[in-house]
Image 1 (spheres, rainbow, N blue to C red):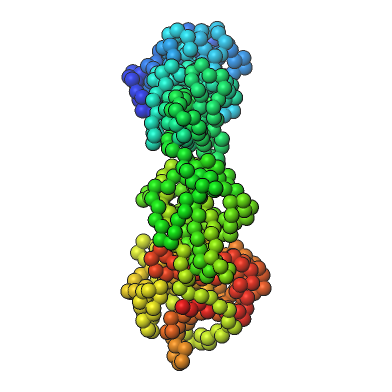
Image 2 (image 1 turned 180 degrees about the horizontal axis):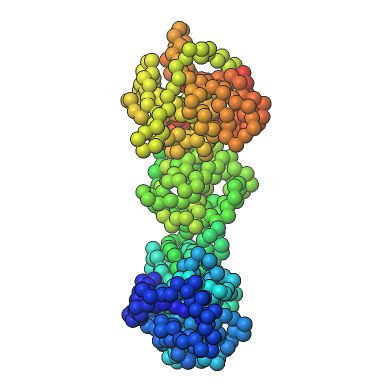
Length: 631
């Protein structure tokens, strides 16, 4: 017998109506061993019926339950099995009323330690065929949409293995169809909308042109102005989702269909007509998701005039553009890097003088997150980039490039955004001016660090890393500021500060191209890389007096993370004359040890500005090499 000891347990996930009345059986459940002993002592034909045995052990005695309820149960032995499932174990039976157009869901949670699970079957009558059944080896969940008249259906719940003794819970829900369950009742959609869907509750099949037989859909209508684009992104949990755009309810072909971008689906449609266009959006999911919820976002906007490289907007030094919308550009730039999942690109032409540095900073608004990408092209038909930068889930991305030629040059910036992460507008700042510092190669002259002080990295009361600043031995002029204190990071760089401070956690991973907003404004980076945690105990420093007075900081025998290379040693000098120097004392011979994974350079001032000497360039930091960066 499969015995369910029922107790009121209204479950909000389905929207409660009224729980079933309780039966007071929890206090007198017989011990299992006593039951076995009694069964052995008495002939089964003469055994009396236990007083607390449930009455819904057969289909004929199925118990009516409210349309939305939760029931706790204890599984035992011996009920009637459903005729539509020969060989299945006996079940407990329930009757549930399902109005026309409504969806019923039933789910069993096995709360016992055995975790044998259960199977839920739906039948129209006691002797009828199963109209729906949960997998016998998977999640005990079944759903069915009544696309006919009001009906009463039967639920048969069986354990998947016997003997079984343990607690389980049955959740039953009967839900009304959504208001936009048909194309004719489509909900109006506007720019910036976040439609919330449960398409599987709909009676309507997904449009045939979507190519998803058996899927159901909910519908929205929208007006796309002339020469505007509609962009929709979304995902469903735990089910899949697909979007399609139709010219109307009678349409047999799709105007546009979503494509996968990671876990997201992205749909784009451009109205190239000179008049507004009415469209219908269908949001579709499989007919049997488990509590599926669709999260979507819709944006409508005009097609940007500079979405073609030939129509690039001209910008000059100091340009600050707000509200740029790469989401509505036509197509991404494929000159370099992976354009998968990107929006289209917006293009900007900028003149860079000989010896000048171009810095382009793309930034999202407060609270917005997205993968911004900036590419620099020498011409519209270029197949390679002069430079490119991208930031994954960072608020800003910065590209820097210096025109090393003898003449001024016009170059093209291409700005794009990962459409699956953000619909937000982008701010773009551009500078094209003479670099304030220049780099030159020198021979390494590593200072003797015998007796040098150890730079301490401590742990705060909440477990966070703290690096207290030390005073510089002189006032240091740097990118127009006067800096008086310094901190050192185990990730291979110094931070310079105008006042005493306590620096936070270091960037142990993810060395990026300098300048970058990922680090503080004023940074001197002889070898920004990923090191093991022991690097925090390997920093030494001293002040060296003489004609070239300077602060020397050494990273002594630090081990690159996830690498078999021997430990490396290098130094950073901050000189009283306003320059900085990097000295590579013992660097090993592999590509990574000599700079293949490192970022070498400086940054400072507002923005910040900066100079990248080398980024992931093997050989840039070989043993015996050095770099001087001076005004």
